[in-house]
Image 1 (cartoon, rainbow, N blue to C red):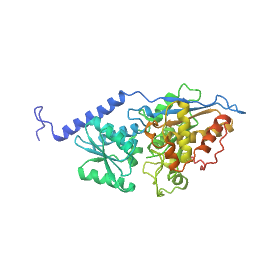
Image 2 (cartoon, one colour; image 1 turned 90 degrees about the vertical axis):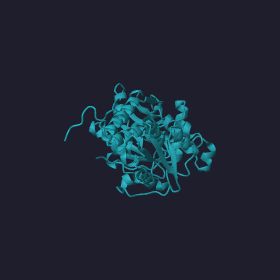
Image 3 (cartoon, helix red, strand yellow; image 1 turned 180 degrees about the horizontal axis):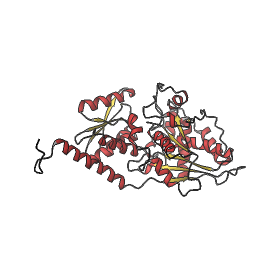
Image 4 (cartoon, rainbow, N blue to C red; image 1 turned 180 degrees about the vertical axis):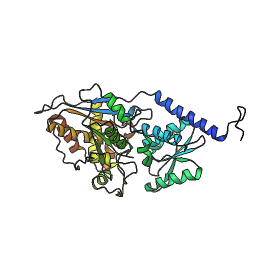
Length: 383
């Protein structure tokens, strides 16, 4: 066979490879233009009554990504994963089963690459979420039953020859958990000059399970003594599946706390790397979110409240044991997109939520270091 000469036009395969090379460059250049997200000190008392323990709490502020949430990291990883596997091409329609922050971030990257993006979502999705996705150039495709979004996303991808990103399956495998500027590596680099650079706990929620998988794997890979706690909201099955080992558990309704909690155990959830789990009532998540918004001087989202509730519980244990150290959790997104829900007193009343007792519990904790909420937790499990 005669090899192609320099004058021969590039083959379709060569053109596709050239396009993919440039697509990866565009995504990497976008990341290069972005500074890393901040690690904030959360205001805790310097000393606690009757205890010599000194505990610092840090928030990894993921709201500063250009699309406003932790899901920006996931979307970037999913696109790179699809490109480097040869699944996303120049004319691909990219599809996801999501009505929230993941779809917003994925729409951003699709537009960066000049690709069509379709988010498959329930017909009941709020107009505010639809607006955020469409503002990034995405399209919305509706299904009548929420549980149908996965199959419909797959069907659409097959019908148009596109690519289904499938965050719930690929989240734990698309991110390089060994490092390469993932969120875990970034946290430890930012802690290097702190009083307690190796935290006692990292606290995260689970939506896809990708963040907890990355954190847990990284901790083991680097042989850090840090333990991983996953907080789980109401109407989510992650905690029960973790405690019992039953991955087939399901729930009939979804979580109120957007971005975390699932009515089924997603493929990306890796229970073996989780040391401890805490169930957080929805009223507690929202009370902590509102309380933190006042302390920080800017609104934060509901999943940040869930994270803080779990962090406060663990810090109170450290104080009771007289143990100094640090705890890290995530500020997942800003609160502006929740003005019509979590920050709306009428919505709170319609949902039948009472924020009084959890707010009092937070105030009592910050005054005394004691945690007396009695929320259900499970025992720790170690590998």
